[in-house]
Image (cartoon, rainbow, N blue to C red; front, side, top):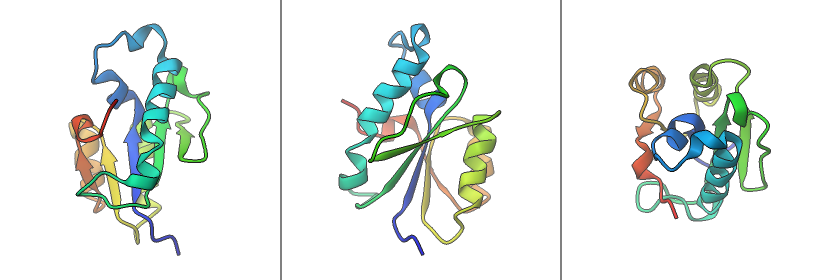
Length: 126
């Protein structure tokens, strides 16, 4: 049984939380987020989330083709990114699950399943 905490990042929501021109290159913005998340697999997010951590980035739309890496698994949402995140939370009931999003409706859905939720600013960003 997997014992690492599962950190699920709402890619579209987190990328959209910074007005840095992401809308001109959504796939590039998602790839930059993926790369920024990579160190978290080894270092966690001190002090709330000690390592090691399984990091999952949920991508959708134009960012759907962004590949994963050894440190960050990407999951391409076939339709709604929110529904994909809820499914990931539901499918890992025995693990500690943390979801990063600012979406209020998604927060309610995943906390009802026992997940912890943090906003985008909780993540360390370069």
